[in-house]
Amino acid sequence: FGSSSEPRACNCIGVLPFRAAETMAPKKAAPSAEKVAKAVKGAVSRKVKKVRNNVHFFKPKTLMKRREPKYPRRSVESRQRMDKYRIIQCPVTTESAMKKIEEINTLVFLVDIKATKLNIKAAVKELYDVKCAKVNTLIRPDGKKKAYVHLTQDYDALDVANRIGII
Image (cartoon, rainbow, N blue to C red; front, side, top):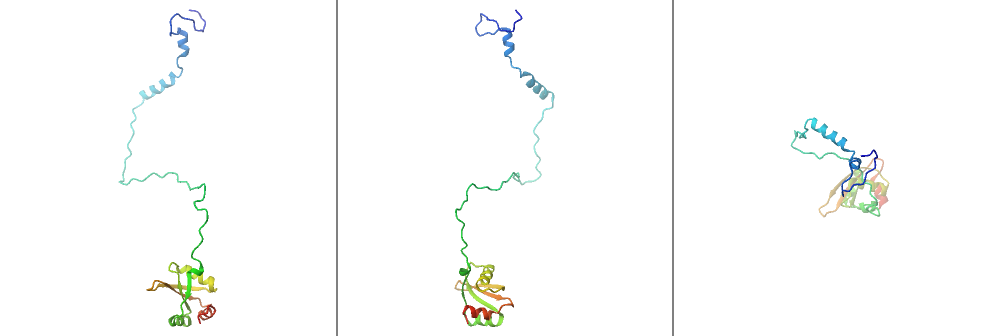
């Protein structure tokens, strides 16, 4: 054989000359052989089972991202349906209500059934410009809610009742 590195022509079909076969052999054989050798030399590692000391399984805590919606789910914000005029429907003008106005500085109103004490307090402040000390409510047997609005000592229930037109 000559010293040239070029493959020579051969009469055999499908058989490469000796030098050509060497050049086409894979070069990556050495690193994979090293890995296999390392694995054979080392001890056989078995997967260790996690010892569970509790009968309850807790789902692992993963990253919880805040929602960042691409568009608003509602196109228009809903308006507040409980305004001051719906909360306070009318003042009560019975004899017992008049007695409360005169003696214990308390106004009596019929209010919306869904109104809370805080709502009633705010509505009275807005409508009549008075400060409430406390509000007591009850639901009458006919299904209407009645509110006893006790005013602070700075305001007189008689004056407010005159302004409203009860007395």
